[in-house]
Amino acid sequence: MKKKTQLIHGGIVGDKHTGAVSVPIYQVSTYKQDGVGNFQYEYSRTGNPTREALESLIADLEQGHAGFAFGSGMAAISAVIMLFDSGDHIIFTDDVYGGTYRLMSKVMTRFNIDVTFVDTSKPEAITEAIKENTKAIFVETPTNPLLKITNFNEVSKIANEHNLLFVVDNTFATPYWQNPMIHGAHIVLHSATKYLGGHSDVVAGLVVVNSAELAEKLHFIQNSVGGILGPQDSWLLMRGIKTLGLRMEQTEKTTAKIVEYLSSRDDIQSIYYPGLESHPGHDVHKSQSTGFGGMISFDVGSGERAEKVLRETTYFTLAESLGAVESLISLPAKMTHASIPRDRRLELGITDGLVRISVGIEDAEDLIEDLKQALNQG
Ligand SMILES: *Cc1c(COP(=O)(O)O)cnc(C)c1O
Image 1 (cartoon, protein in one colour):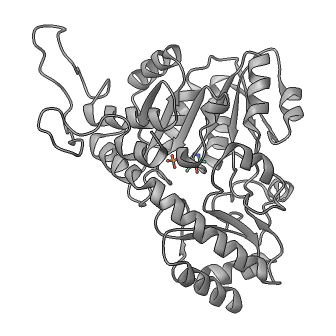
Image 2: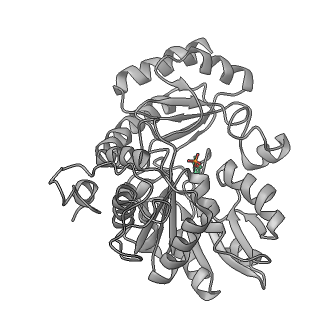
């Protein structure tokens, strides 16, 4: 089954009881048992048919063994971290999502989970960080907001040599463009709030594991810790996923046009987009993904100019988040990455004038016209 077909026919389709083509919303907490202990579903934290349909769909889309749905991307990441024990060490990509950084540096350290953040685009940096108690490598690629690329095959090799779990946050690329499990990842997770949902109307997280053993462990945690996704949101997410292919294809085309326009201006200092041949991760990304995505970051020279540009756009809404049908614009230094000290931010390359856009599915000409007038005024 090809991707666009799988988005419609993957997982559990329809309802076997009524023939309904769309999976019904089973808005229920508990289930009648046919005698003690004789049941298909027991309690909706443990299992719910609507959530199960979504979990089965994401497992198919990521080519994994089993899927799990959570109340947010952060709840999904927290559940994965709970697979580890106090005293274990995990290596992370240094510019992971800010919420992941906060979770690991401010919360999980209290449970004695040891973490090191390294530039995973350099495999030798990963090898150097491995310690006696290292148990996993957690990678994000492309990253936010500089779209740095990590090579899956190289990380997988290191993980296998050292008997480590290889975890990937695949939020930016989505399973439509990139399947890390083909390249050796053991766990793939998503903030489904972004491209998978796609309509800025649901907060959710998804995890896929590649073995029965990991599935059993993660289901135990999902049920024990309890951060599940409700049936309404599970349904909304399945509805969003059906059009993921169409949205990603359109976004890809429009993004390429916007990058071309931005490149033609001489008042923009750097453009970060993995589709550009000059991007340092271009070749690696092309070898492991079939699309470049809809995220672009570019430097307009100063924080002051960036704020003016952000005030002037009409179709690019000033907001955090990404991956929706609406185009969004943000200033990482003052928004998503404001909690990182300025020195550290500059070290990472997140300058004061760096603007990030998430390209939606509006008309490309309108979007370019909008950026043009905003940049001319800024
Ligand atoms: C948004 C995001 C998260 C967190 O997901 P929530 O759904 O907001 O909890 C994690 N990773 C990445 C890459 C994200 O963009």
